[in-house]
Length: 158
Image 1: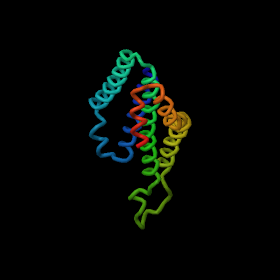
Image 2: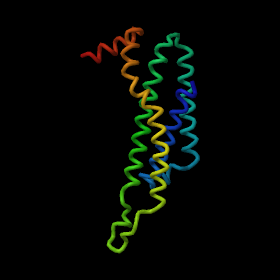
Image 3: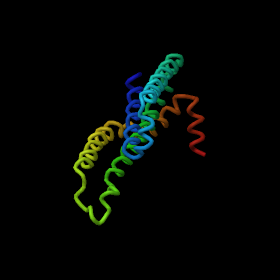
Image 4: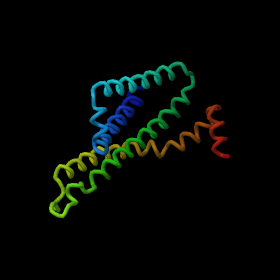
């Protein structure tokens, strides 16, 4: 269960942290302290343990099989939004390069940073996109098997 919930949640937290470092560096300088990192780690462990305890208490495996892909799909959307915004921000010209006296080539560090983000984005899309595509089918098929989700499907039809 940790691999199914904890790892994607931790990866999402890491993407949000990198997003803050690139797009909002002043805010990142405030929250990069070890106390914040420990708090985020505790939240990730807490959510994972609550999910494990919740699934062990529930006797219905269908709810677990339906909720995990939905959670992973939502985390993937957050990760992709952060990584996409980072790429967009890194592709923008720096204010230092917009003056008339300094119209030199783009920084090699920025190109390397864009490359590093793309190295993360491409495998993430390849691995999480099938889950994202299958979520509507999972909800549709599980709503006929699980009575509590039939309320969900009835709301979706209206």
